[in-house]
Length: 151
Image 1 (tube, rainbow, N blue to C red):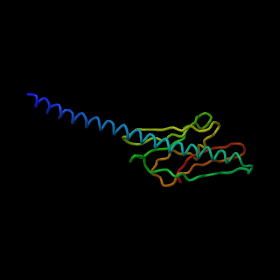
Image 2: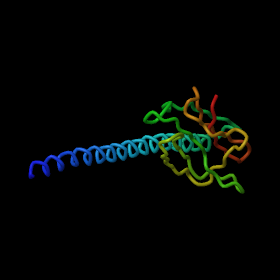
Image 3: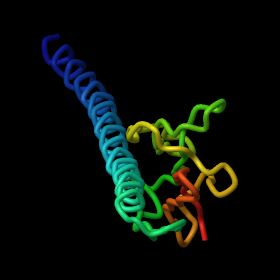
Image 4: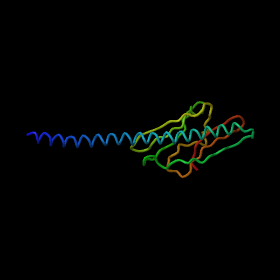
């Protein structure tokens, strides 16, 4: 009788271990996805902040600066989107958000420096499968605006 109990326990242990492994592996993939999205949103946020500082540090008149971004085409096999979050009444930029599209839902946010305005005519929500993504900054009169767009 004891061999039946041991055999049953071993079979149960195999199934429990398999489900535990799948749970842990799924959590690890979600965590890695979130970290990659955070790196991407930090990169875009830092680029916009640097363009803003560069535009403000020169005494040249009105100007437009653009930088081509080097971002991956997918994160852990999932397509993702990049967007600028902003206050709709003041158009003040708040953050850069990167989120996956599809079955694996994950997102990351990176904050932007205060007082950045979003160029509503130029900014787009970017899907990662586009070929070229640019971050831009323009100064016209005393207004400085930022955007992200695909080219």
